[in-house]
Image (cartoon, rainbow, N blue to C red; front, side, top):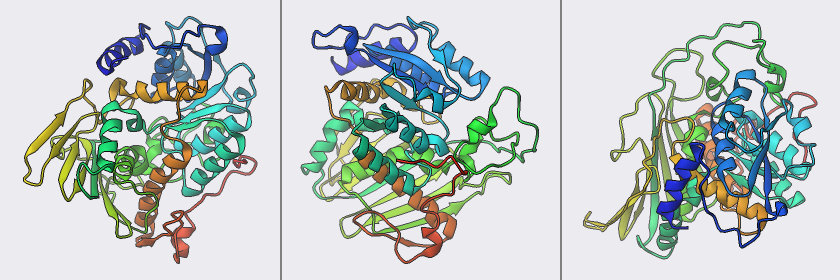
Amino acid sequence: MHRRKFIKNAGLATAGITILNFPVFGKKAPSNKVIVAVSGVNSRGSYLAKSFASLPDVEVAYICDVEEKAIQNGLDALKDAPKKPTVVRDIHKLVTQNDFDALIIAMPDHWHTPAAILGVTNGKHVYVEKPCGHNPREGELLIEAMKKYGKKMQMGDQRRSFPNLTAVVKEVHNGLLGNAYFGKCWYTNNRKSIGFGKKIPVPSTLDFELWQGPAPRKDYQDNLVHYNWHWFWHWGTGEACNNGTHEIDCCRWFLGVDYPTKITSAGGRYAFKDDWQTPDTQIASFEFGDKATISWEGRSCNNNPVEEAGRGFIIYGDQGTLINGGGDDYKIFDTDNKLVREMKSDVKPDPNNPVSASGNLDLFHFDNFIKSVKGEAAVNSPMDEGHKSVLLCHLANIAQRTGTTLHCDPSNGHIEDNKEAMALWQRTYQKGWEPIT
């Protein structure tokens, strides 16, 4: 299908009108249908449910959440689906169902790896939103699980499936910019203060025991659920993993680098005085020996754009420069800074949209996962690739939290000669909730 027609139809499909016309190689039998379950459906997850349901030969049979309003959001998102999904509140029970093929995960970060492992160990293919883990060790656990169980595992770094980017990255690797050696990326927002939370009884609509799951137990407070957990180290991973993952991944992808040798981070919580623990301002740098460097600038509370875009990345080479404005667009400049090529996108990104910052371009990534489950395509972002990019974000956070420069083994990204930083490589789990591959 032509890219413009795909995007136009995809927009209508996620509005509740399924008119996509994907080729299915003549196979219309029920055996060709992929049955999925979506776990975590408050916001992004309800969008995922609706989007996957809009794809040909995909049925969302189950939704899973631990909060009543979130469950209703998921049901509302699928109100036009041919079959109403079954609601299962406990993911442990969900994964034991034998009548679905793939688990879609949009739960809080501390649940991503444990849920994914529950999925593959119970015979499910897994699509998990970024970041693929709450800490570096969890990414390694996912790779181990992917290899052990042989299931398809896709991470939600959707730009890996954007058609313009997937085409031009090959050109960059073949010398379009000459020697590409520096990637610069950024994310901006205007998030407000989360205040100081009060410890209150858990709302009757929320199963807080299941919500905390693998995380050691803490008291409930009124500024945590649904979104603000991102800014607490106990459950979240800050803006670096929340949004930085995407463009940091693009820089690593375009530069063709894997594990870093040196990481630094500067910043802090400057905009407000409140419970927010992660940086609202962060400048991280990643060196890859003598080959390349990546820098990321995150500004959670000041959305003044860079290159007229709230998010994006730039690749610098000795024969030219490529600038991306946050979506499937790019501009290429020669060494005299003359614009020599411009590729525009049909979809304008909205960097501050918590549901879908890149609009219906995400459907390319969802479709790739479904095709991989059918055996019709390779996964565009398997765990062993997704982990490398998420690891950079984790390392930036570790450098920030310890106030140290990290030096890493370029073969696997492991921190060297820094006991304080190495202690943050993995986390402690609530007893009985440890992810086991």
